[in-house]
Image 1 (tube, one colour):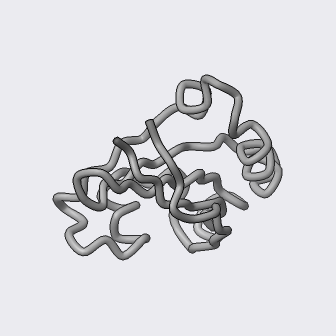
Image 2 (image 1 turned 90 degrees about the vertical axis):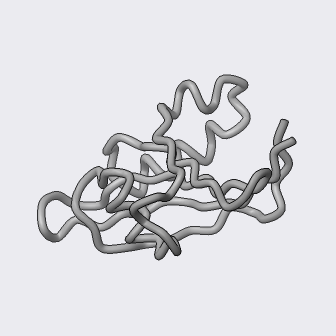
Amino acid sequence: MSSSDQDYMAFLNKANEDPAKEEFAQLIQHWDPKNAEIEIQDPVDWNRSGQYTELLDAVREAGQGNDVRVYRVAKDGTRFEYWLVTTEGKGKGAKLVGLKALAVES
């Protein structure tokens, strides 16, 4: 079960397309990128109830139809950041765009 401490907030960051876990940890300025607990989830699996369809659609639209990934980043035992991420553009000029929220899971 999850309850959100924060509303989703938008972000923009320069990055390579589809960053791996460690690269993503560095981009979000995680305090320990090499050991960050990050899961990359399929948006369909993450949104089984359909509760976040509008958010996923908004991120997909911001990326002009590019694939969306869900990154789940552990903050501590019960708090997790959820990042809904896509790329805007291609190649070296690509930027990560999306939404982030903090969830408390029990």
